Length: 322
Image (cartoon, rainbow, N blue to C red; front, side, top):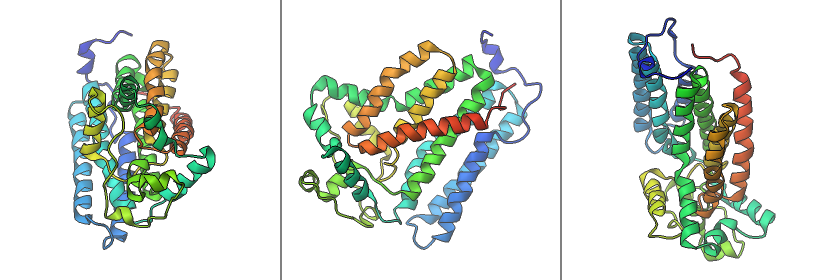
């Protein structure tokens, strides 16, 4: 059925009384990490700020629920989703505040990389492919991450509204599953680990165990590539805004975009799928090119993204919006 602007404000006949499934996921992750913070209160660097941040998110979620209950329409339902998606930028660096208490595991993953490929692809990729055009394509792929999320969510909202909540739930839940893994598996990625060790030693296959080094250090290598490029600068600005030595394994960039590709396929929109495909390929390559991830992180992202999608998709078979 063709979408009309007035549909945004049309009051639903049977509005949902409780929280949306994705909001329950947020509260579940909030409570899980809150227990960790309280249990490790003396070891966490900023426990009070982390606790109050969770209080603010809980209050915001309940306020958005109240707004929807007062005006139960598509627009207020959309706003509830938008708020939770926007809060992911707060949850991401929060994983570092918890996993920094654990010993770093980059030496293990760099060692696997060396065993599989006989080298460190992240160290050589940009060096061997420093062409301006190639560099900008890689950076374009990397910064297309959030636009791709927005594209799929908006497509479902306007073109497949009955499945919109299901789509949003799958994407947001996948994010939080990755965040749990990031907390339990503290891997920083090449941009942090290579600088801490020294690229000369890395090139010689020396991968020391740094223990709790990243509990106190957040310095990273400069982003490789054509430094005067437009998309290059967007990558740099993104890293400056909120990058932390966390969340390398698996690559959530690859994992989430894999979920998005499956959602596009399930939407039965060949145009949407084909439009996204080149950006997806560029993004998968770019995570190694800019040294955000090891190749093993990318492989794990492909596998987990597929597993998360199908597991969540099958688990939400009866989730429909009226």
